[in-house]
Image: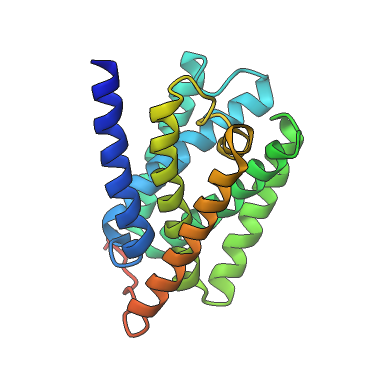
Length: 209
């Protein structure tokens, strides 16, 4: 039964990941609250881990903080386009930075968390300042889609892995070739999304009014 459930979950992850990787920009408005919630959920949990040394989602407090931050991010993403872009750019900068620092052997602590936050704020500012929203959305959705595709199959064959705790280290520890394939798929996704969205741009919005 567990194997069947894992296979179904992997198939769903594969299909959703491909959709996100190759068509994430066009579906971005639908994905905004979902992206905002899970980005905030994980950021809140990692903040508790960095500041208090508890594992992500290891305590009720980390879950509560994660849900609160996730709910705030989801609401802001739904209400304001600028906030949505800042959140997706910031989450891209934060999780990529933290993932790389953990992959090279650092442990999750306040310094890693702080570096991630600084990069997140900087990338969000640069994105808004230089009108790079389209590129950031395409890159972020392609990377996340690729990660979901390979992450689903990774968990299928290694259900007790530490994928959620540190995806990059988990991929490298299992087989570096998986990381290469994930990067290649993300690049194909970026190129495909750029080609199909040359003349399509998301409209900004303010649902508060």
